[in-house]
Image (cartoon, rainbow, N blue to C red; front, side):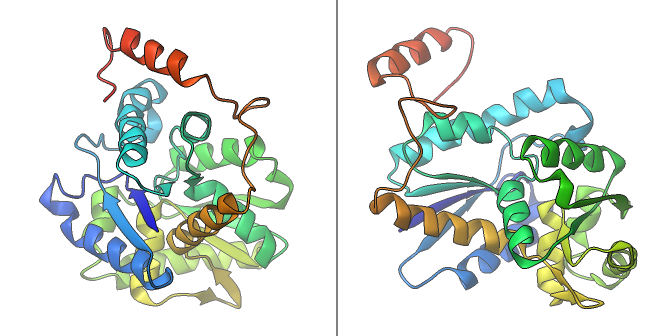
Length: 264
């Protein structure tokens, strides 16, 4: 089994992300079963704090959509969106035949399995807004402790903290404890950079509450969906939100859009 894990970092393109990307690879490979290979890919252009600007997200997300098509064409069995914005999740589910997993959607579902109420501890007010919209869209808002629970840090600060995580993890733990005191029994560290930092630091619980390893959950969900697909459990491709166009129509449409987009 081959799983493509799409990071929202510029791993492989900017040296500042090398340590993060290697840690992410180890984190993914440690949890999958023997015989499952996980390929971690970054994006060439990573806009800092892109969660603040929906219009610019559109262009950044196109990189992930291109890689979705590439992954299927190269024979991968599943595609994991490792960006907690769940970029192009609905589009990917309707476009690809292989399972597509969004790391945030997977985390919310697992959190509800592991506890009653969950809280997202994140790194900026803008991301807190994004996750608030997500839980409404995914129908899980009633189980979410809204907070906000925010540890102010940039993506680069989190990536660099892999070498010396204690300071940032102390701030994370303080926010998590506040969430637990408010009633949360599961903590979701988000974005994925924080989840990997918590994993690297060996943090699995805070004040008795589970700190969810969202990266591992997403990869295992992908592995499970591949198995279920073989058993005939997969979305309807003829009706509903994930229906697909006929292959000829899709290919013709993509050829037309190539006049204005670089799609492949």
